[in-house]
Image (cartoon, rainbow, N blue to C red; front, top):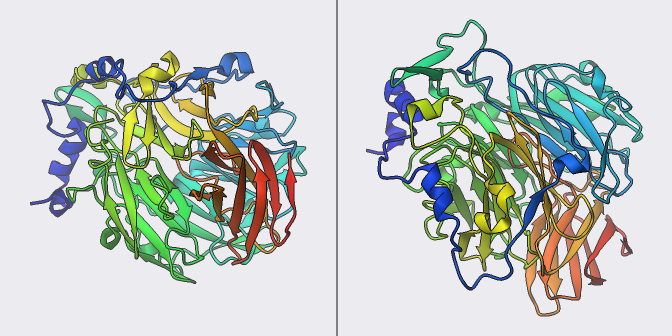
Length: 565
């Protein structure tokens, strides 16, 4: 009998979460790190290289979890981060989310200045967890929504100078336990709407706070707590939002939401929403125009390849095999396969991690933030995953694992296999952290995508991409006119003279409680010029011919002109 048949049996399900499953033959974290010191393939090109430059770049922030040990489920939920350009100077800035916020202005050359006080963010305090970035009023400046435990905050960007909290007048209610959120153009009316994921019912008087596992008190798993469902707010303009969760069919959600990613995965011209849930079936909200249909189970994305639920955490969309359809990745709990769902078309997916060589990669890890990105610009989307256990004393319970865990860098081998190249990328990716949020962006504008990661009990990691001998690239800065100003949800096709075609998505969401650079980056290998076709959320299609590579190009909806940077 498959594990989904046991969902109602709380005792069995809870034991599975606490122990991470019964697989005594699995390698420990220590043995996995040793194994990864050997190259997976002698035929690989130049090794990747990522260097943590957070301290020298000026990021002087640390996440600290106060209180006695062991920690409970709320204390180890972690936080998010963001790459964003809040002042429109063309350089990425950094937002770090916690009970106290930190905003750093980037100079595009690898240095960051703390501007938290100057931008008014020092006045905000709450149990903030994650963030979503998007220009909800189309004034040309990106705004921020902060998720929170028993709270939430909408921050309006005042012309790139500072942020003003407008939560009360917006109509967005405080959430019981907001996790990941996403700005998404639901009706293509030119406005960004807001989805906010929620987790479980938990408070200071909830019983239990901790659970006994192998004679040790430790954090309980999500099956001990009732689910809370995500909510949907429709942007009515003039800074006002309306809760349309019921009207749009969000009653069909399962709750215990951790990861959120939006995309037009079916070519309908409408944005759908994937929600990664913790040890209940995952949700795929297909946008049918005016309402959603939850096709998670029938689409093949609700469970793993064996038909079991898993601890879905971070998630992302990306066309990993360049077949013109967006696929889905879901990062999961310890002893659970990190799932890649291949988009077969027709609203159907096949969980393909085994075929892609990923069945065992990452099994020892509790994985959160994950993103598709092309770190070497060869035209194939690679994967990065950050991990960290949710029980701070897990090493006292299970000697095969640890609280702090290394990250994973997986190279995409022509869409047929993902190869673990973490150990080749330098020591900073192997450094054990309590990994949670993760964002992607080229902060120094050198054409190589960099990584920002959260260590929930430490300093942020700013992983500078120093991979040698990378391919050529093009980066698109979209500006909507009929569509939302950011162009979020647009599908961007890049075609080379050799006839290769790449599909990329304009997004800031995905990963775990974090937001990435909205600019659309596409590695193109040896191509010198490309044609770019933008399918805007409004239905407008723009074609731009003979764009030289190794440039950032601004593309305005409805215009035939392309502005090179």
